[in-house]
Image (tube, rainbow, N blue to C red):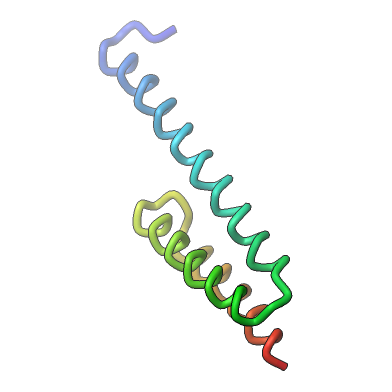
Length: 85
């Protein structure tokens, strides 16, 4: 166990950050699955907008890397565009 006040505080804050990050990662995964499971163009487009917004927010808060957010958005856009055909 930590002995210094600052170390105790770091443990406390890292636990809070870990919980926040886990929540957002779970939300991200479920949002992505919803977009990929959609077979209708219009519904997929609406969900894609929400997913990209969430990914951008997560990248700005550094919960995920910016390149990962870009890769996920590209992957989702590819899926949504394939539904138009």
